[in-house]
Image (cartoon, rainbow, N blue to C red; front, top):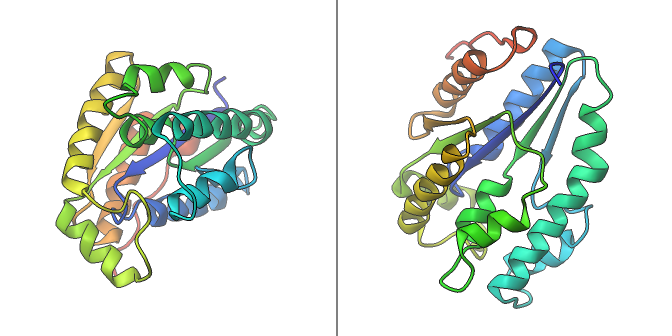
Length: 216
């Protein structure tokens, strides 16, 4: 479908991923007259959303396989009731999603649940047209999380290992033909945003082109 585009933002906690996703969605909405939908995963309003939030906040325990199944269910419902219906209305529409199944390959795969098994659980999920991976160093991420404050969630530790797992998962998805662009997310967020705009302009159709933002 040439008039629909599914954009995913990925990265470690503290990489600036959610802020860049928010800013990109706002710029696209301005350019497209409101035809860009910002969303996120885990999606609270979709199946198993609040269960996942409770696990991430360490309020309840869950086995790795249970959590992988919960994320796959949440994603299937998110696709069926939110992402798909929005994109299928036509009229040059974009969904900007903060996390998607690349996160599941990184965070839900373990010694007992392989990346291949996690990918199989998500085999019917809509493929992103483009995934932007905000590649920030663990030091940058920890510093940003420290400024954010609050208790750390389940996966907000061990960022060096998580970064390595992202590289392995990205290789798996690229091997099946997915477009994934890594962006240096260590600089200030305005510089990261302009890198994201450059990557989007290089991979998206002409009706989605965005102007770089001024550095103030």
